[in-house]
Length: 498
Image (tube, rainbow, N blue to C red):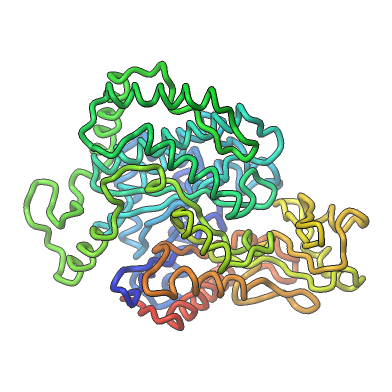
């Protein structure tokens, strides 16, 4: 779903397909048919955005088979679906009977996380609609908090710096820009938006120092600068919050890097992007595009919104704001988003979700109501505020065990409850936090992000009496969530587009 912001730019609204996880390409194609298209039809729209989740096996199948990638793009078009954002947080196994801590692996200390995210970016540029030049990917906020030491912080930082370089190269090759957002989540190394600021701004500063701004710098100069960055990080050490960097791998030669970039370009071209409309409104063969005048205007506007040629990691690596996570950590959305803006940290996308809220957790009836949401599949980190600061547990059953979490103040639990259907009293949801965040994100004179994604993936983890019993009920629920999000956006002055 697309909306015109009062400033003239386009804001995209999608829903995330990790609610019906598929591990294989065949499974992805089936979910488009069985779930996504029915949701679109319920909304009465000719076009519906989906935030596609591609498990590792599905992504690999698409990345190694250009015909399969073209086939997915054709299937999206045929079913009236479009993709401008990917959920790159879960790697695989999101449909397993028990996900829990496994969702945080591989983390950003593992080369496989960099490889997977790079592949997702290449796939995304091939899936973007012809009139859209910017895509986004949400990802793990570095790692789960345990065992994340100074060495791990340097490794993760180096991986993000490398990713930023690859995304720069991808735009040079395709004319399509991809940004990646760390998604702060309770219990992770980056638990809050405040936690994200220092490592991302440090990444920005070191990237600017090591990468320069001239686009025609030689590979030799870049390599020398990378080595200086590595030397500086080695002498400076790192903070426990993951802020240090040792630059890019010093033993990778400039020749190998350029050859790798060329191979990536050849692969992207073979994936079907070479015959797509270029960002300046012309076809790849130099002929004029046959877009309508209104589409061309929208495309030109998006070009003006694109990342500037001055290259820093801040252009590529930012934050994905999940409003359930924001609420679970008791972050004030206005304070949080204003702090990100002041630090010049980009909000690459926002996930519209609501957490479980218990106002009086000391009452037996509230404990009983919460216990119905304590299920074995996902972690439901639970938090409360005390005079000494935020306290919490990794999962809801731990909080309910007694004596672990103070119960003199409200509890919030990381359980994505349906936006349009808060739980019955004595519980409720944090929908007001979502509303405040959305107003700050897109209610001002210009949007702070143009990619919004409803992400209630826990429909089948709800208490038995609240779960959808079939596909029809699930599609009805997702459509109702999107309708609520649509109404919130139009109330803020955005206009829904055909």
